[in-house]
Length: 250
Image (cartoon, rainbow, N blue to C red):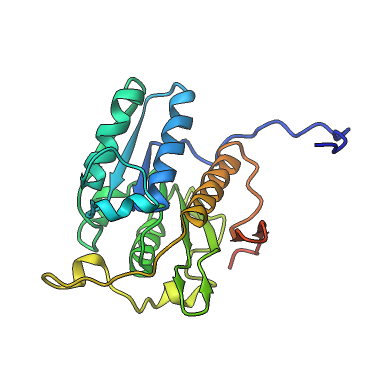
């Protein structure tokens, strides 16, 4: 790179808006398997004992290897925790939750002081998580998703949203404020699909999944050091576009 160095020194890190107690991963699919690996490695490097709660009621299948990395087939939450535990368990405690979030259990798994990284394959789960976080005084919610490859969609678009509450005050807008598809989701929770019923999602691109995951952990890091200046990011991988968006809090 030939870019000239800046003459202005960076501002010193200010730290997060509250001290996190746990890190909750909601969804361990194409995005989530990247997110949990990156977050685990970072948290381990900080050498501060903490807990990662890994939530997903689905199982790894052979066909998932196209865009997910895992050592064996089985429940996603257990497989990921068993895989990462031997490498990082001296600092990071792993709590696998091999079930889906519902209105009945969301309060059990998302609590005060949590950092929530939410990357499910349905908007109804995002809406559920947002509603829970809105009831907490201190929470940071980072939600990510991307298009699948279908009809006229290339599967290269994605976005990340950040919703932070500190001392009972919204520091950014909720996920549904500018996204009607989250405010009034037309899809179903995995637990609402019925016995034996499946709803196939459109195929997704590995590279878009990885880009969304990178944008999510980058947003977390910006918040972690007190430098977060946006509440949403739009990205497109083919044209290498990443656009941050800042808005006044409603």
